[in-house]
Image (tube, rainbow, N blue to C red; front, side, top):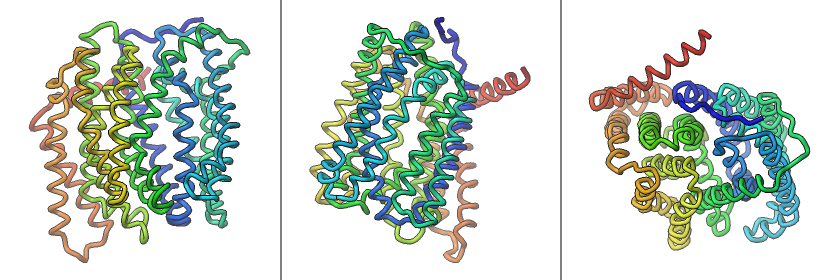
Amino acid sequence: MTTAAPSAPAIAAPLLWSTLASLGTQVLGFGTFAILARLLGAQTFGLVALAALVIDLLLVISTAGINEAVIQRRHLDEVDADTAFWGNLAMGTAFCIATIAGAPLIATAFHQPALSQVIMALAAIFAITPLGAIHTARLTRDLRFRAVASRNLIAALAGAIAGIPLAFLGFGVWALVAQRIASTAALVLASWWSYPWLPRLRWHRQSLIEMVRFGAYLGASRTLNQLNIRAAEMISGALVGPVAVAFIRAGSRVVEVVNQVTYMPVQQIAMPILTRVNHDPAALREAYLKLSRLSAFLMFPAFFGCLAIAPLIVQLVFGPGWEPVADALRIFTLAVVASQINNLIVAVIAALGESRAVLSWTGAQIGLGIAAAVAVAPWGWQAMLLTGVLRGYLVLPYGFHLLRRHAGIRFRDVLSSIAPALASSLLMAMAVAAGLHWSPAALPLPALLALCLPAGALVYLAAYLWQDRTILAQLSALLATRRARAGV
């Protein structure tokens, strides 16, 4: 049996369910993160963050981009799916064994002997994740984001149930380890429940070669991208210690929540939607610019709002002892424009099957990013984070070159799609910062946020709609599609 996606993609309904999935999962996941941070402290968090950094980087490599190859293939038969499943599982098992064997060496490299046992425990993730990876890829391929919403929420809930009680009981780092493993296992079980497909014990050598050939470039690109993003954490872990890593990780975790709620819903549907129109240049351009407008409309106000109220967020979420996180949060939010553009460029190039171009695009960033981070390491982790932000903007011209070359989309069209959101967000951030500056010092933190957030949202919406009202048609289509499907 061969499955093929519909030829006319609808952005609205998948985006809605993807947004619901991200919102629910991030509220629950971030709540768990904040509770554990207060209970365990920066030292414990930093140690596990170092171990998770190693696991996350290797996890990207272990999939060899096979999941993306499943999503990207225009026609997928059951033999292809079976091949992808067993190929993923074989790679994951091999990485699990290799990581356990290499854990002591990794701990030595970071000068943290206690890191070894944590890495050994988290290595189980390599063997667990592949059991549900192709199920998830097939759900994504079919744009079944209602199922993804349930799956992600179950995983976040399982992590909270496992981690929080252990933290209260004094298990320290093992509370965080249990949270991660329980979440991964629940994600696999929920994926099988959402997509009840039982892979058969068979595979096709040529199919695997084709998927790895395509996916290897994407896998390498994603690995390099993670190295770019998390270079400051790695270098800080080796040169400064776990506490600096904890501050960076806490700031990036706040940004991840904002990113998951505002951009990830768009990113999850971008590649499958763009893949379905990759044979039609006009339709591809239209879909890309719609995704660009929507993602900027959602992302920019959220990130620039965080920039304006960073100290308040840290005070509310993490409490005393975590004040340096505000620096990390401010720096991360400055990267939003480059991040939004870069991620969509990668999505459209990958949808066109140009995985080598994705690799060259990411490779152009990593050398610059890591070299700059090492060069400014004596000035502290804040300087290293700033170099990462600067790198994102310096490589944009090359990204626009690839976008024009492979998709025929011009720089000025992209700029037009994001300009209203950028201008409105900057105005909103300045208004919120001014309001905080002139607010009474005795005003409680919850009251201050209750005043600033709605006021900032009103400023943003008014400024945006004054410049561009086409977003209303897209949002209206989203709601209309949802009502139509609900009535079926």
